[in-house]
Image (cartoon, rainbow, N blue to C red):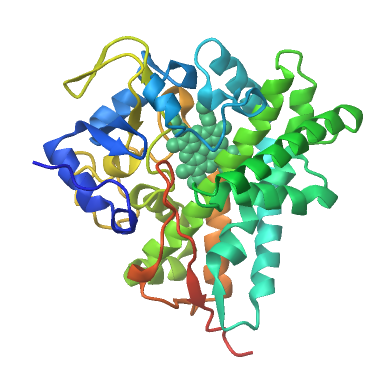
Length: 399
Ligand code: HEM
């Protein structure tokens, strides 16, 4: 039996039938990707094991020569000033880097970010007023998380437009636009080095200032951590807001229920993350010794992708998995990963999703999709799942 195509616009539009086929017929299998082959894990139980497996390394240096030649990591992330961050790190560096960032992610700082998230959201929603149609990706989902990351990292107001420009080229340019992405990455590398240097001379009340004060983090690790927070905390949240709203538009009964009772919002956000989450596959992993996952032996260095989308629709873990059913009980979804690399920004991401989606539905109660959902286009990424645009009619209530 042939494996269904695993990339291209038709797959991106609806990957779930292919995942269903794989879960049933080839739950741990080799799939062709542009430039190399990788193992893909699709069942919930195997995914949960692989995400926390002590013999699966994250350091890209552990990847096979074929994988390294295919350049499938984060965009150009092999330079030390951008690559020495926790998601690429194993023992003993991973716990050290992770602890430094978690210590700076204090409840006080997160509470402050909720207020700020509300302020930024209100301004973005106000800017839509009077328009018939807006694009929720451009007008809400993109600008909100970047503003919050800038606050978290302490990017001065005057530099935010430049920062936003470089970040959005890296995030959303087609992977083939190598020259454009390289230019933006070069510029961002310099920008982050300046930002870190600035925190030493002009400390602020921000996460980067706290990291700069620590003796146990190198200059490359500092700039790499800032880069990781920017990338990990930006595109993912864009996709939570975009994919989540699309799921609601496709389920009018759930949309009506959460409009009538905003207390349902946390459950709705959680189901959005399970049903069509932002992260298609967890980041690359490489065995440091032969390992067996789901009965399949995988050799050292062979690249492994764990499909969070497939695992989150596994009928053995989630009854009626293709239904959008907020308030499920049972096993937790894997949209934020599991184990030592579990998302450090999960609490913040949920706050951003709740504030953005809750405020949007409150302010524009008759909001409606302005296009056929099957015509929407999806990012062609091996790691992420998100929409290029989400046009809606505001149907603003007349005063
Ligand atoms: C809905 C939004 C988000 C989703 C779905 C998400 C998802 C994930 C997933 C699946 C992982 C684990 C990857 C793996 O094991 O390969 C991860 C790790 C991480 N996330 Fe998130 N994330 C989101 C938002 C954020 C935000 C807002 C931040 C920071 C401000 C953030 C920072 C991180 C960091 C630093 C890691 C690496 C943790 C480690 O390696 O120990 N994420 N995220």
